[in-house]
Length: 95
Image (cartoon, rainbow, N blue to C red; front, top):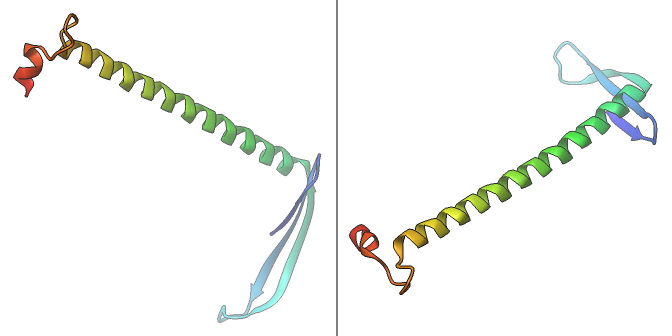
């Protein structure tokens, strides 16, 4: 398949082999040519979908990172004494 993408349409040339009975050799080729704005719109929508998916995965990754960071901070506060900053009894019981 050969594709040319222009600003408003896509030109597609497809080459399909016609094989012999044993299927080992192509005897001829069928050539199909189409100038399609529908294919162009489809390609553009996949670009938008890919970009949207990338942004969504980035946001989800960032939120998971922040969630783990806050979980670590809360656990650190639970395991240390606020006044002295040393480990408290709960931390020593875990060890």
